[in-house]
Length: 507
Image (cartoon, rainbow, N blue to C red):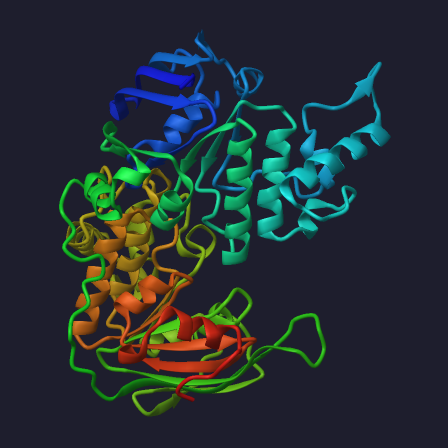
């Protein structure tokens, strides 16, 4: 096979912190190579070296493209060498049109004048290649997340790449959008384009990729053809230890109802007489792990945010330990023993400029203060206690939270609620964007909380996660409860039939 890209003894460090060391890796023509590893293993940093984000001179070793050693000084140099990159965070210009985004920095012009008619016509061809059926004049802010990701690929194709680097391209996509994206990547391979594909989702890796390379602690520790290896082996190589069980489900005695929700209804913010959530009722008991399943738009996150006081409801009552509680804002929910780990960690879970210590104690200021004055000694003590208890990988509690991997950020978000004496903890997509090893650690934390009698609610788009961890699953479809399924009756088919409103179960 022809080698299109090769890393030779490449090392990258930030100050005294080595991200990866002496990595040797080959990519062959027309193949899809998976690059997997825990958060912090060095995958994205390696892609940024290849993409010219980290220029030559900032790393050691050689990057060879098409048999020629390259010294990229910028992302444009990498692009000129035939490399395009699809970032995890979609990086488009929302105010500009679809066509303008495709050719950003690569305008079709004559004597300094943009040839708009030609540009729009060419843009339509690239949209056709990725199956994106939108008007090229449409502003990007009108596109869904899935459409924006397809537009990112169209923009990459406009540079006529030989190699495309995908960094967690499906992390924010709905299931239907994921299937479409994987199909497009397969088509790229059939057209001779080589791909490096970073993902935490093993089902994607094994369905899509020809080979798998595993990074652990900055070293390339394993390579294999996908057909010759199992998921368990890859996970073990990623975390450096055997995993007896992905989901540490324990038999925990389930007690009395802790939280009861009755008739929660949320009106649509723009469409009159339409409801985002319609008359949703459920209860969760002491020691129970209750899952919430449903398709995108089913109202799962909206229901949880309404319970927590983050969204206004037009109807509905919440009871905690049999007593009705009036929750108008988040502080009311917290005072009544309800905590919420939100779906979007970066937007509403962490405060970027703050340290780990500040992020950990932000929801527990009353517990570390007296007469509105923070006891800094107590703040430090409790922060260090949970920092150690959750085995956070960082330089200490004074580290900035943005220096942490996704899994370690999620541990910090969890810790701020563990500091409080909660009765109910709601976890909305608790392992999104988190590597396999960190997922297992988070599952163990959830299990320990349930063992202590806390009532847990997990909202997740990953059915294996819900089926592995939960005692019962509530299914929402079109804003209504369409399923209430006990553990003995779990099946992906049953859950999906309820989610698509084909059948109802247990209600």
